[in-house]
Amino acid sequence: MNGSGRLDAVAWARRLGRGEARAVDLARAVAARVRAVDPDVHAYLAWDEEALVKAAEEADAARAAARAGPFAGLPTAVKDNLTTVDFPTTCGSRILEGYRPPYDATAVRRLRAAGLALVGKTNMDEFAMGSSTEHSAFGPTRNPLAPDRVPGGSSGGSAAAVAAGMCLWALGSDTGGSVRQPAAYCGVVGIKPTYGRVSRYGLVAFASSLDQVGTLTASVRDGAALLDIVAGHDPMDATSAAVPAGGCLAAAEEGLSQGEAAWRGVRVGLVREALGGGVDGAVAARVEEAARALEGAGARLVEVSLPTLDVALSAYYLVATAEASSNLARFDGVRYGLRRQAATAADTHRRSRGAGFGPEVKRRILLGTYALSRGYYDAYYVRAQKARTRVREDLLSALGECDVLVTPTAPDLPFGLGERTADPLAMYAADLLTVPASLAGFPALSVPAGRVDGLPVGMQLMGRPFAEAALVRLGAAWEAMRPWELPVWAEGGEGR
Amino acid sequence: MADEAAIGRDEVEVMAHLARLDLADGEAESLARDLGRILAAARALAALDLEGVDSAYRVGGGEEGETGVWPGTAEARLRPDEVAPGLERDAALAAAPAQADGFFLVPTVVERT
Image 1 (spheres, each protein chain N blue to C red):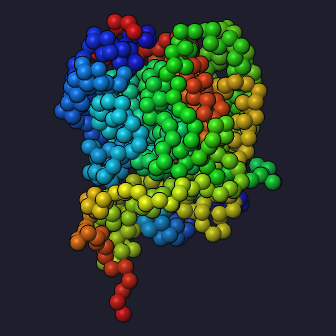
Image 2: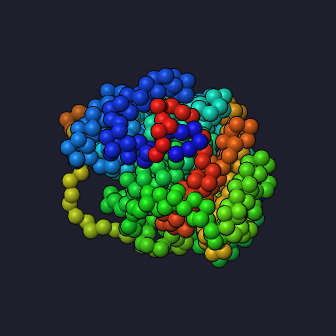
Image 3: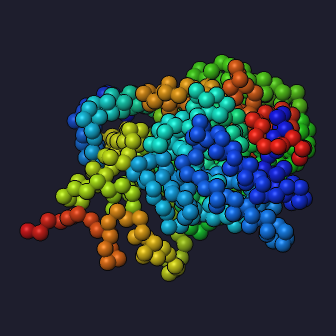
């Protein structure tokens, strides 16, 4: 599958299907890996070896009886903001420490229906608010490729678990880049689907108009296969799209087998502003090299402009925090979570929230409250929402001149642990290139595009709404052209 | 856009009151500094010409070919209001910090006079 010979999830599924391996052995290998590596990486907030092995045994039995789906038994990780009945769901927050939800998120239910074996719940910035996973109340996750650096965030636990072989693939969530940026920092693949593509039922809300469940995987076709499993309309989420889903794996396989030919005649829109100021020159250079390789394969490079790129970040932080200030009102110490009892209900709310939320969550709740308050609403929230319309128009206009937009995923390389925790603006800057697709609700894919000083660089491909199949086809073709290396972790190397 | 993005400690305290959020000693000062810097960075929004641009209010529920977010307001897409099974009471109460007789227990909300 890739330079290191490590098998991706789809390759493992085929081995299982042909009877060349057993899910239970795979589960045990993954568990051994978690035991060996996670004390250093800290990708998991909770995991359960016994349940993992049992689910794998059930998958083996179902497969022997020809009742198993193609991916049954594959060890899968889930970000800790998706509800699960068999693991706590904390969102990386003290306010939900030990909380056991009474229902599974729709995406989790679909994983179980496909027979996947859950390893556990992955670490994240508290309530998905962060770009480094350092804002977790339970301690940071380290980047498996560079342990003194962050894995990105907020889905840093999921990205690190995939990169370090502590699961075969993982779900995350992306509000302004929280799947794509950690994928880039950990050298794996991240897909943020179109808004509405995957149900948000059971995804603990941060910013409801932006939140979307996404995938973190070792290969593009793995992302496509996992997306096929979780995507599709859900009556439990009023914003879920009534659009036929599926077909992504087939599209990715087509891209893989076509390789360079898949890019022939494709108009690749290079976003001018995304390769200039505010972007690390070495990162931009890797993506420019990738673009030239695509041109060599027959793609046509088109320079396009996103004039609102510089204001998109501000618009994003105002809209997202405004929604967060409303969404997080539910954590009041009454129905679930931490309670700090006081004489009155109002004081109990204040004390519980003050004790349960960490500094970044407080900062964002207050920023959002400010943006929505009388006297500032028009100047901040309404202006941000109008700017959002402009961002979407800019993206549509750019996509009118090309088939796919290409930028670096993150403007920089994985930064050092502790480097940005005291500087919120520096932390927010990591989202510069991922927020436009979030504001517009468009799908985007991050794929590895080489390294700088051993650190991975991600390339972002953005497409039209509901065009995930086209994106993964091109992404898989890129992978066929430039296979990337992942750490070797299991016996691997036996081909596909 | 406000000309002056500087935020005072008193303003932060008003927001914290509105958000029902206790702040620790010294937290209001550092938050005032952070919020001031974040809002100052948002000044670029003030320079953007947004004359005649609609707000992106409506989100989701897209049909094929439609985009995830639309500008302008439109009516929400609602499903028929039909009774369906929901969360059982005991399951809903199971994670409550305090409960009794099938109810959530809370401190006094309205004082008896």
